[in-house]
Length: 264
Image (cartoon, rainbow, N blue to C red; front, side, top):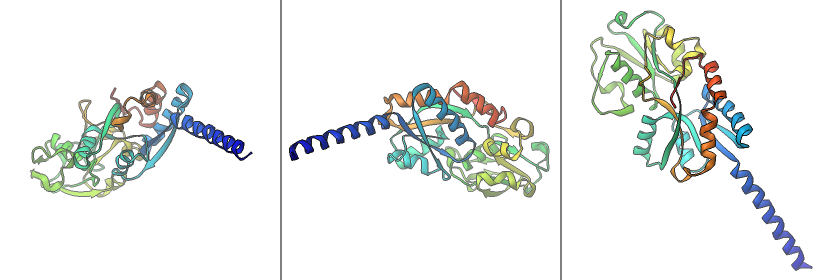
């Protein structure tokens, strides 16, 4: 009798284990940064479920360092929050074994002002608000360099900081703020460098309101990232297909008011 019960018990364990494995094979945990891109992932989630039977669990982060750490340690299966220069720097600094499997959109960073209408009107000693996080501060400074407002040391990558400025003809002063708060600072500064995903909720239109804007040649397309050893997993192709679907494209036009640039 004990032998029979043991066989039944083992059989149930196998069935339960197989069910769990089957569920895992149809589920992906995907990390995003809280905000409009999480809303975009909600659309991709619906597409993935309808077209592929793939369940996407969205894991939201508020810190730019966390999604790659979570992906590397296996807490999530993929992430969508960063651009290639940032990933390259993270891999260099932290030795992550991560790889890009697709692109989504470019959300152009722009220079905005509530006080002036052109770069030529920027006064000497102007106060400039820039993001204080490593993903965006260097990008903002390189945009100011492209606008010929500053000159940076060479070969700094995305981690340039105000102290790396070697020429500042207008003697600009910098206020480093959380990227999500910069749009609110516009009345208190002369110019501000703002990400599109924060500009739009603040009522700003990049193409209409920015006095200087990243172009289509921007290297800062957002990317879909996974662990390198998962590159053959068919779920990853399904994730890319969902994020590059017509439904997501339409959602992007709505969420970002037509300001996002398709990168694939």
